[in-house]
Image (cartoon, rainbow over all chains, first blue to last red; front, side, top):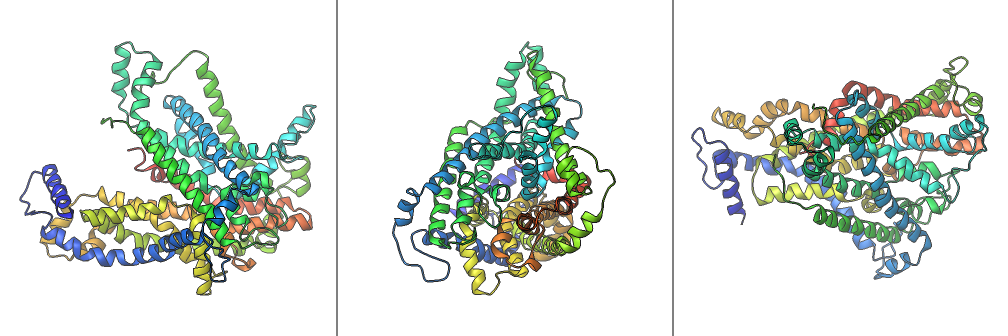
Length: 323
Length: 282
């Protein structure tokens, strides 16, 4: 199997560069042999670090999800008890639900905004400037953005100051019913610029003459979008969707900094799965150190991500358009 | 760029353009607000949040830097960010080169294996990682955090650099081989200098990510003298709720955290956005 792969790639290389003598026999060229010699030494350190500090912990976490591990004592096996407990735990249900809201609702919000911005920016004056400015939230700490968001929305904050100035009544933006919505809006604000940059990097590769041809043929703007832009940026959209799925589950810092006060965890209605892991282990004034339980919740989220990514890849699969 | 690439159904376009500029203004406003508030007094920030300060007050900055520990936190962050991003790029580059140059199942499998780490949420690994570090007495230690930073940023860096090395041509190595340069000599003396652009991008992206990192710090650091900037900010907010608020110093701390990133972005912005979206658009 490995040999056939080698041969195939070697012959592909051959066909790409036909000029010059090439003593390649099934991937056994002198060059390939030299590369083989450095393979081990060059990979040893990163592979060791990765195995010990990344893959090892991942595997242990999967094991610990079935135990009552507290971080100190030897874990004892609990079977699937952690998982049944999770789905009886209103706090986890809330966190799980909120994670899905961020994944789906915020995801759709970002996509709609980023795709429209991308279309508008294609022929707008100052597109480089716009692209640069809306990318800004992506390069600073979410803690900072959470502080700003708090200042914007608190009772004596920026928004209410404006409302009062124009004779209105201050609005309670950060209440039990509205706080999570505000977090979701912030997520859209923070991430849109990044996805605009990704979409534009893909769409910029579409040659201009496609559109010119279409115009000559009398295609409407809508037809161009439908038959040129969308099919040719389909792959990028798919990658962006996978990227958002993975990163939406990791959202933690913003929520924690936005909602936590006086060493307490944020109120339950603001929790997502990442906050849950912290909340049942180290978080709060009296940490619970329920490591096994937290690992179980993290495993549920990993399965959710894996399932979503598999689903997305299936749904987005099209015949690749080469251009 | 052609002028007729976008749907233009009458009113939609002006509305859209206005929305784009509103969005841009909001982003600019957010950053200006934070920077300007860092030289306002607390009462000015609370009572006239929309106004410029009567007179800029840089006392906030010195209180934040000295009394609230943002100076020490900035030093910790800088040391961590520089060492961790240099080391992670240093160990990833040879690996990425080896992976990009060898064909076949093993190499493809290992490339996939590293990429796998991109999809694993950190929450999965932090708790076992905690006990590994505790085993070696590396909790609440900047060295421990450094190790964790290197490990958690390996998958991304290897992934990024493998793609980059793949784009470099093979001919030079063949020439070097004919000249009798060893394989590792070829890497260090010929390929590394060629790969400078990719290495700088990798360094930059790691540095930005690590500068803003919070979750790992929150889990593995306990005492104030080991705080990074993000932790100092969280600590400051939580302390204020007991002691009454010094919002001026808070925004000075915020500015200390964001200014280096803003300057870096002004300087190397294109490289950052292109690096972050590299390979995704293709």
